Image (cartoon, rainbow, N blue to C red; front, top):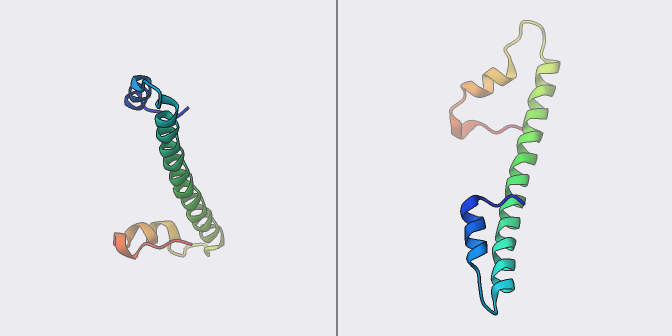
Length: 80
């Protein structure tokens, strides 16, 4: 289900009349975290597809677009 061992321990410690509500809240937080990670992965996928396309269309002997991007300072990197 994607929970860490610490998160599972926390979920199993939930007791009482509001256990389901508390568990639902913790599960909603995990779902939001997973959705953020998926968004990040989708962006990474798009960036990598763009780099592959640039490399595919680079002229023989031309500088490698991926290596050029890696050589940029971190704040200037903006792919796609």
